[in-house]
Amino acid sequence: RQSWKKSIDFLFSTSGYCIGLGNLWRFPYLCFENGGGAFLIPYLLFTCVFAIPMMILETSFGQSFRSGVIKSWERIPIFKGIAFAQLVANLYASSSYIIIMTWITKYLVSSVSSNLPWTSCENQWNTKHCVSLLTSHNSTNNVTLSELGISAAEEFWSHEVLGKSGGLEHVGSLRPDLVLYLSLIWIAGYFVTFKGIKWSSKVFYVTATLPVVLIIVVTIRGCTLDGAWEGLRFYLYPDLSKLMNFKVWITAAEQVTYSIAVGNGMLLFLASFNKRNQNFCRDALIIAAANAVTSFISGLAVFSSLGFLATKLNTTMAAVASSGPGLVFIAYPQSISLLPFPQVWSFLFFLILLLLGFDSQFVQVEYLVNFFIDGSKRIRSRRWNREILGALLCFFNFLIGLSMVSEVSIVLCKIGSLRIYFNKTFDIKNGGIYVFEIFNRYGVAGWCIFLLSGCELVAISWFYGLDIHFKEIESMIGTTRGKFLLKMSWKFISPVICMAVVVISFSGFKLLRIGSYLYPPWAQCLAHLLSVSTVIAIPVYAVYIKLKSGKSFAQV
Image (cartoon, rainbow, N blue to C red; front, top):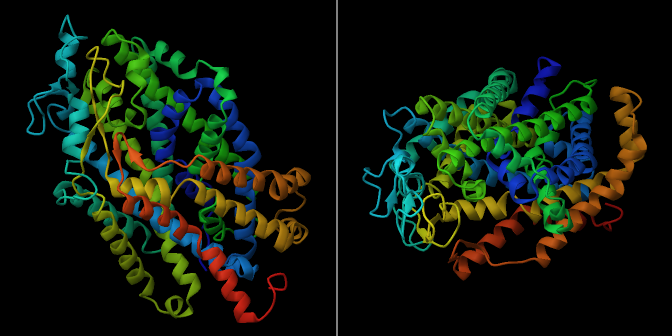
């Protein structure tokens, strides 16, 4: 089995995987919506009591056996189904995560045009309701431009990037430009990973460090703009009353899990390439700290720029920042367009996003290829099987992704994101690619990932035995500080957190909808079947191994 050439390779690769789009795309608006600076309290708390112990557990478990995901879970036969459940979760993730990168590539390419396409209403995709940001900025009456107006940036996102059709029932034709970008990203992913981790680890040195440097550059530039401090105050002002809302705590737990990527087997996989004496405890602390700091700085970059936008348009930060996940694709490009040399800053920003996504995607491809190699002696023994297997897996994921780059429908609903331009409006809220939303909400996030994490904790803590596991840990890195705290977290605190999120997710069940569009019944069933398919392998394999051995569950 290959090993990292240097111990720091694991640190860069894991940091590159964990520090991804969730830091710059997801964290800032979640922080704004859930109490600003107050959101950092539950976020940091869950990082310390849940994420870091989970990272140490997964990396130590993978490093102690050094044989991949399947072989690691063979130590606990009754829970070997966890390996197959994590495979399914990562198949879904690799197919859908890359779609966000495809959208980012569309913006990146558009950034090199002489005029940024989301600043004008003279394009073929614009409607009669389009309102140009530059026009409204230069207008003396920019708040009452229209009773039915849509910003040029929103129309670019809704019409040009995603297209439109009648809904999920009418998927529509493929978008040629998005198909091209999707195929190019998959080709790049294949050539980065087809030689194994010794080759791909060299790429991680660039993709893991360059985005952080660029984020710092963009943040410094944003903090020097007029109105930046108003944006930062709006971002960080602590609304402690929000902490009384239980949903804020659940959101923090979900964001920590999403960002650090515990529960999906990826940390176990990466640690399986470590040398026996790698200090995984130190690495877990460094990675968790780097992840939290990057998320925080990303918020500074985004909201300092939005403060500048609000100042230029003489409007409130609440109006600018209320577009939620659309901050990256709607509000932020609008603020960039008001800067000198907007093409440069736009290209820089979307390059950061693309690089953040690249290393996460590369690791997912490595995981999928190695899963089958580690589980099959026939594949492992043949020289060219790795290259062929990698090509087939990339092509399979590409085919799944085609369903997410077809035309989608635009759904009308009332939101506040464009009150920048007018007093009363019904805005277009992009419905997204409906297939993508099913994968994103039900296949790679939510209760199924917490259930996977809970099963990991129960399997290692209660069935494998923490005394045995700590003997292995001490044989690798010596005496472990905080042993009692880790035991308490692994055995009681973290499993309770996982099960609580699962129960709350079911108790707060809502039908899947985007804006005013309610998914049809068959799509609702498909979405929940996707979640079930992620975890169904765990009980199914347990029953299989029990019947095969003829023993009781306790004996197995």
